Picture 1 (cartoon, helix red, strand yellow):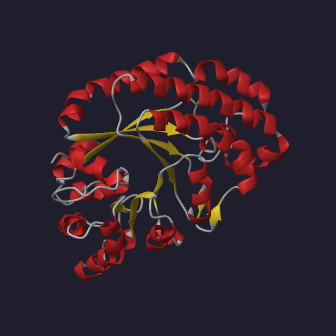
Picture 2 (spheres, rainbow, N blue to C red):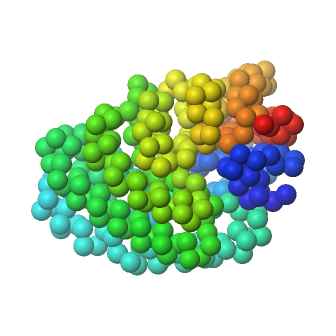
Picture 3 (cartoon, rainbow, N blue to C red):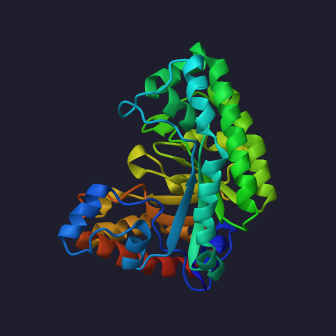
Length: 332
């Protein structure tokens, strides 16, 4: 079977013939890569070349984002109100962004058609994008101080994302769609359900319906503890979520028991990766019931940290590949 066939079968709740996909859902930390280069890994590899070096199934995230001007620093904003937004708005959602993105995706079509490459379309979501404009703290105040502007921003983003999706579906790609949100932290959601229903839900409903009509699954990317948000995002038309961070208290076994059809990727506690073979295997044993259940692709629960040596990572991958074969023997 091809990598793409295995991937799509898992998303459809079916059983691959040989194994479940072996992949990384997010790039490695830059500091991790720098460490590994000192330990023998070839230098200056791309994400795709790194996946090939480690013998992973290849997953390409094709991102199409509004052209948000750079902020003054991490967490800082670029607008203070409606006048600032109108100033940056005219160049933020241009057709040229979509066309350049489509050119990149089209160049991948031969490998995608052959089944050796899984492609996901990555978009900014309706929490992420206003935050990038307002800045972290002002964004949270804006739900109360400037709600009209948040709705204006999200209407513009909806129109941009819809244009991009309409163009992309004409290429017969991708394999799934994901929206970057990072809407939670280690104690739960950063917004109330009321805020979600007012400012975020309306914009996802039509977008996700359109994606489903084109036969694709939709994921949300959010760090932190997303447990309380699962009913919210299901109601918004999402099919799944990642990276399912264990250090934020997420228990994928409980999630699977409560939501049997929910799609998940990630969930492997990265803190076990440099603790030796026994700890690595124990973590795989913990998540093996979910691997057996289907609709789940195991991966590091975000990005491999720089405390993991190249030798540690190769051992993790060896055991990951073993368990990905083991899982299909009892998939439901």
